[in-house]
Image (cartoon, rainbow, N blue to C red; front, side, top):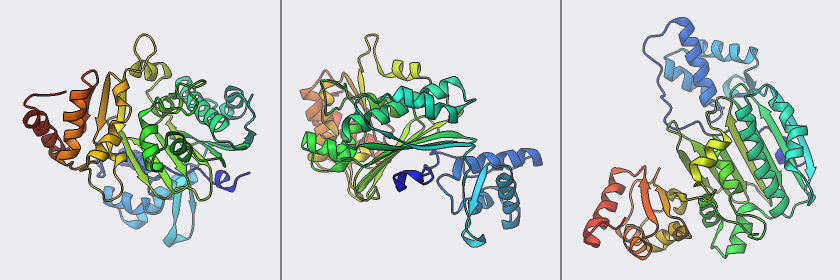
Length: 375
C-alpha cells in the first residue's frame, strides 16, 4: 500500500469563527462538557498546542488541563503520542479501514462503498452516510477516470466527531491534469478553475460537477497534489474558508481527504436543490477570490481579475467570495464590475463577505467609473 495513504488521515483546520474563550461562569459538569467540546473542535488543527489552548480559553493550570486530556484519552476519545513536553493529541478513530482497489474501467464506487466503507460508518445517521457515499464516489470516480494510475489507496476513519475519508492515487495529479488540458499557467490557476465547478477534461462522459457537488456535501476537503495543497473548511456560518499553500505531496499523484461531521445538517437532496434549478441545471457559480492571489500578492491587476472571471459568462449568476481578501486595486475591480459587467449583462456578479475596503472599492467602481451601477 502507498505509505502516504496508510498513515493517519491529516487533521483539518478548525472551523473558523470559533469562540476562543470559555463562558465566564459554569458549573463543574458544564465546564467539563465545554472543555470536551472545545478539544473536539480544535485538536485537529492544533495537535501540538491543544493543551495550551485549553489552558488559555478556560483559565486552567497545566496540571488541570492534563487531567482533562488524560480523561479524554482514557475514554478513547483522544490518542496521545510523544513525551510530556512534545505531547501530541489526535481524535481516536472508533472504527477504521485501510485498503487498496484497482482502478479498472468497470470499478464500481458504489460497490466499494457498500462493502468496505459503509461498515466503518455503521450506526451513523442515514443522511450522513448518504453524504459520505456521494463524496466517496466522486473522489474514486475521479481517480479511476482521470488519474492514469493503476491503484487507489483508501483510508476511512470514524471518530466521535466526524467521518474522514482519504483517497490517494499515484497518477498525473489533479491540478496538473487540469493545467495541461486547459493550457493554464500553473497549478494554482487550475485549483481556481476547479473551485468554480462545471469543469471536465472529458466532456463526452462527464459534466464536470462531480467533485464540485461533493465538496458542497462536506465539512472540509483537502486536495493534496505535488507542490500545491488546497483546503476548504466550513466556517460557523456555513460558508467556506479556502486556503492554498505550496506544501503538497512530493512526487506524483493526488490525495483527497474529506470530512463529514456526524451532526451535519445537510442532505444530498438539499445540496442538489440549493445549486440547481427545476431542470437540474446549475444556475450559479461560487468563486473563492482568494485562490487567485499568490502568497503576499495583492489583487490589483486586470490579469488577476480575468482569472477570477474565466468561464463565468456561462452562468446567470456568479458569487465572488472575498473571504480573506482585505483589499483590491481599482484596475482589478474595474475589470470585474465595469468591463465584464457591461460585456455580459446576462451574468449577475454578486460580491460576498467583502471587507469594508473591498466593498468601498467595488461601490466606487460601480458608480463613478460607469456613471451608473452595472451589476
